[in-house]
Amino acid sequence: MASLEISHLFYAFRDIAVVVHSSADPREISQLVVWKIPEVLRAKGALLCVINLATQKMEVHAAYGLSEAYLAKKPASNHEIITRLYKDDRLIVINDLFNDPRVEFPQETYAEGIRSMVDVPLCLREHVMGVFRIFFPDVRDISPEERDFITAVARLTACALDKARLFEEQQSRYDELARQAEKFSALGRMAAGIAHEINNPLASILLYSTNALKKVPPDSPIKESLKIIVSETHRCRSIVRDLLEFSRDRKPSRSLENLNRIIEKVLVVLQNELMLHHLHLHKDLAPDMPDTLLDGRQMQQVFVNIILNAVEAMNPGGALEIRTFVDKVKGVHGVMIRDDGCGIPPELIHKIFEPFFSTRPKGTGLGLAVSYGIVKAHGGEISVESQTGLGTCFTITLPLQ
Image 1 (cartoon, one colour):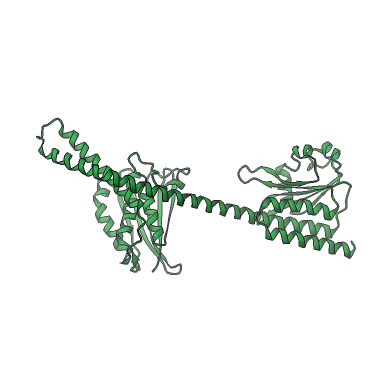
Image 2 (cartoon, rainbow, N blue to C red):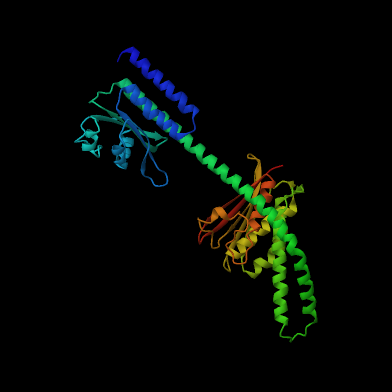
């Protein structure tokens, strides 16, 4: 190949690289590549197919120089083509259209004015992303320089498509977080209004029903009904309290606290609950736990919420494990709470921190939402791992301050 032609390939690759690195639109990148390569190599056209991650099927991502009728046949859609190309890890030249198994529609391909093809895989870090196929109007011998050019463009395209895909995923996550933040804000305002409107009538109901319960004779037929009214009113007040807690945007009132001591206080409060359910407690508190700036009352609320959820998820005789940890290298400390209960179904686990979502018949769906907000306000993270029928593990990680 003449030096002028080599420089022509170099400048073409440079032009492609400039656009690829400056664009985050996968369609724009694909369209540029399928147009530029046929222009440089004097080919009839080109096709770029990408594997859909959801369906694991090949889909045409961009095409140039091919008729709609031929594209409707979905040439290069055979997954075996990609697998073979990936195993060979090299560019394949197809000059015998009617006898090469990689050509799925030889008659239609010939009628399209195609006489030879070149296939090159789009691979990135041992992952196959798709295939790039170039169509020529004549039987071609591809020079080493042209092979290098096509392979380099394919690798550059694979990197660019992966970058664009990651950008789209991050943008999608950001949009979802923005929607969640807006929804939480609206729910908080609504919850505060509802809670204040309900609180006063509930106080009156509780006052009169409690007084009536004290006055009725022990054998009165309405005594049990009054007990139910008092009990359910207390439950409603608890829900209202959770609503108000959820609606408040209150910053933590920090003081020097110790996670181990907070856990001990929580377990003293809940010891009767654990005994009533005949649960076995395994406690492993880090001996080198330092005092840090925390809102002790808020963190107690977080641990009470999670432990009570664990208690309700376990059968009598179940095991509850609570472990604290310190990682001074990462600058964090935290608590792990693990149960061997019923677990959370995979399709629901991403919803558990949403307000008003609950898997319990009498749950308000606010406990974990409030806990999530408290941990985030402390600059920490709360994560969950669960397997249906095997149990659930919550991990709260807080910065060392």
